[in-house]
Image (cartoon, rainbow, N blue to C red; front, side, top):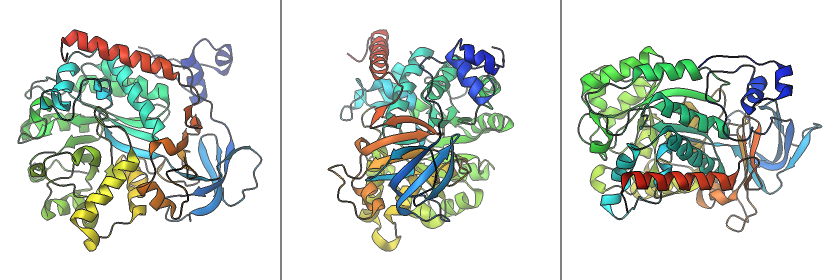
Length: 478
């Protein structure tokens, strides 16, 4: 692949959609060509008459206010802004930062026809492990594209694509292309391949190639790695791999040499003390599934700047012996925490339900011993996610100067109206169907609960074709 540059004159001649995108951002990187229609242009507009939730401690919420966006950035927030620009009437809607999902295996989205929640033999782990080993780059592209489309429809504007089936750099390119094609902000976590031996080091050469070809870009996508599990066998361990500390050092030191952050599951016996003793904890590390930490471990995580992503919809299904969701304990200890979906094979992306589950389980276990306000849960799903992914300078709150990642939620829908406290309404009542408008980096990707440019029928058709082809390839499941 080569790096090229395109002039404004060439853009006007418009030979390719990729060229048009590159001219807008100022450069073309050695990336796969765009395979969908060009994204909507960034335009100047004003969101008017909304209930504005800023998630910025220095900017007050507004019962009725406006948000001015220009060139993909938030310019101003206030009541009745005196601005001449296209108006988006948000009367009866909640205007808030987009949801930030910090751990999602988008490559598994195609497996919905085959995964069963109530039949272990065709549960999430055996199906994704078996079919994952048969995936071509085009399958990865279609699966991630389907998952990202669902994310956007649920109000997610940033996603951490936890890609633990990178079978080649071409698979990584396919997943990154899908993310870029749909216009979402995110981190791509380059991982191992399903079926990869535990004593085989991760593909640092492939990781370096992807970094060279994709980073930096226009700032929408960043790069990291996802690691195999550490130490003792955990949930899904046989399918996902478990590493000795010696292998962890090889994998992580190679990633750190390239300057990319690391993420790892901790859904079995906690590896925190092992990692601490090996000198492997640091602010570039995100752990996933806070189920079995001790007070001593939480103090260490706070001191080392490690973050934790919780995926409550999936975690709540796990046996009690695996542990409980420790959100309250993490917040009390001052550990950075965030919200995630995990996967969408036998449940859907619903950040509002995820917040409800967290609140219900917290009240059931702890109650007011560790206070948890509904506003704190909305912060967990927005600003805290940006902090976790290291992009709080760009997104996570409605702050002038930050990029315009914004959603509008209809508060007049039958399941929400009449609204009292908007945070209470979001946590207790909202659902993805209430998300009216989704704006990412100033591009209006959904409006009136419909995509503005994505070909929905084609996306569904191609995802179904890919899923059925994988089933035929595997001759299983029937």
